[in-house]
Length: 486
Image (tube, one colour):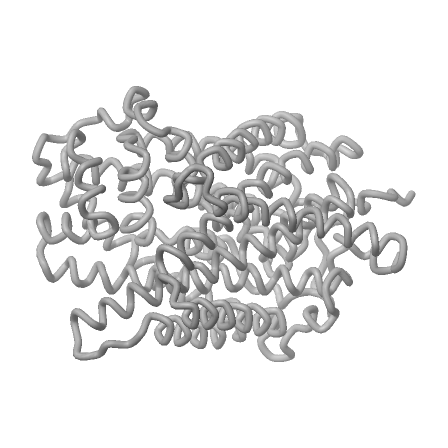
């Protein structure tokens, strides 16, 4: 029986000509993609000091634990959905199967703008950080945009190649990142000016200051969350791999960042962390590293920050390429986007499209003389994070809708209780994000940026829904393919 507004349930099937590549990756490789997108050293050097400085909340470590628990609950329904729907469009496909094709295309447009802005925004920080390092440590003095465009070129080459090459690259970079941050953490605990204290893990510390804004900053650290399902068509065993990889990634990210945030408060002293973060900003990690470990380690950490940013760029590039591929295959976007490379099996047209967008935006910001960090990075990454939070909440609602029609052997926790609780929790985080968007941007209340940028999320959703309605009336064959996958 056909369901007019929700695509019929589908089961993972062997790859065909419409699949995004050969099934060659497993859970460890997918964990690399998810954690790489969260950029551990980037969060430690940029996200954590900014969170402390802007929000005045010393209990950031506890907030990471709370969010990890919330996303673990979300994963119950998310993993159940992945066992029935394998599609390189992930959130878009899940919303389509759960809430209907119109909502699904609206979600797809939100995903496109979110992941593109997240990835492109990172080029601002990558260009600035790398150019600044070259300027201070060598005789070179390249403009930020030249370094950013060089990064675009390298990511383009890796995105064009087969996915397991990318997994090996990310694995090496992640190992270096984790080791660097763990050495930093150990040094803070070993040389604590006020002694090792568990105060930052208490409820009082988490509720003093702008807690809502602090949740927003912490949530941005989990923005690679969807990567597991994005590669479901390239997994050796998608029914098991996606759920396992997502659970592992959430646990690793939550525990690692909570521990690092706690170590940072211990290294400065819990009473001094806010003042130090406001004084040193993103340089706080390197200042503390030099104080507690030494100058050589601080220099190495700056190099590894550059590789951390590069790993995140590559991970988000792959996510965007697969969204283009999925939407091209199903007739929502031009069909050439659905082509895969004969040798590498990569969605090379989608990859090239994302490369062109990134290069174009970097060029526009460079020609306009905009600041690469305060404008390109800050505006775009916060916009991307807001969109992904909305997608997480919408996907939770979709899981409930999907399994309401057919339980498909899933238990009550996975098909109903977990996604319902996740929807309420993530919906609250989204609302708090909107209310605190001025703090995220560093803008004054009432600034046009505080409503223009978040407004793009709602505009994208409305345009997607309107386009789906158009397809239903004018191109019913294309409309029927929405969310069908391979």
